[in-house]
Amino acid sequence: MPADEIIITVYLCIWLGIFGAVWGSFADCAVSRWAAGERMFTGRSKCASCGHVLSVPDLIPVFSWLFRRGKCGYCGEKIPADCLAAELAGALGLVCLGLRFGAVPALGQWLVWGALLLCLSLTDGAKRIIPDGLLLALAVNRMIWFFVLKEDFDAVLNALKACFVPLALLGLVLLAERLLGREVMGGGDLKLLFALALYLSWAQLLLALLAGCVLGLLWAVSAGRKRGEALPFGPFLAAGAVLTVCFGDPVLRWYLGLF
Image (cartoon, rainbow, N blue to C red; front, side, top):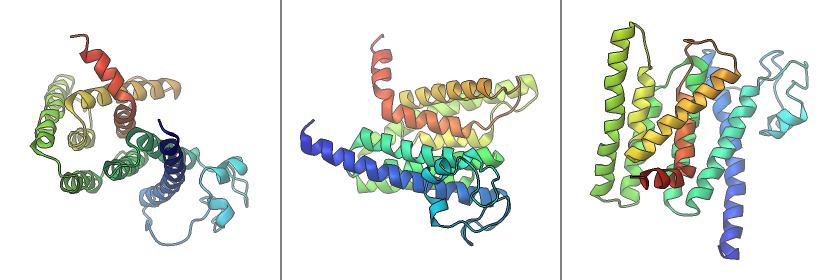
């Protein structure tokens, strides 16, 4: 890679990391208020324990949490690590997308995609709900960029092929629920798969689903979750999709090359 491209990429990733961390902090605050039944976009940020209004030094993404050692600077109560996780996820996710696509117009589509996935991951983690509004936003974003990037009918055909993955999974889920007499997979997760099919090929979608299952299993084991205990799958499916888009092509080429 030429030196000028390296400089542009580094510069791009620095700003994407900053923006991603800020977006993660903002999204976590908005979702936390939404989960508590408060207005999402009004009022200044404050400590959930003592109610003290936070100042600028308290609101620097990632660094404020680390500098305060995860505690409120006014009352000393612990600040949930969820906020730090959201900030890091936002920063790492957008940086990875920036490294994957570089400074091209198509990057805009994927940055919005990643930002929306972070939001729905937080809502699913907070209240086990994937709002239809966020899924619609994913679809609208893809539609807008379809025209902006002047894509052809092949993109539509690829999306139709990819939709067979959630359709097949829906059939398996309905059969399993009928046999077991309990919910196997949430409807929001299935709708998320349909939304992801607008962006990913059928092979990428299968890999994203597999990666999400592996990530969810690893998290359940590390967190000591009991067998059969429900857990929000949206965050893991979203993470699997981002990992697939950014790093999945070599894996798919290797696997498909076996046949």
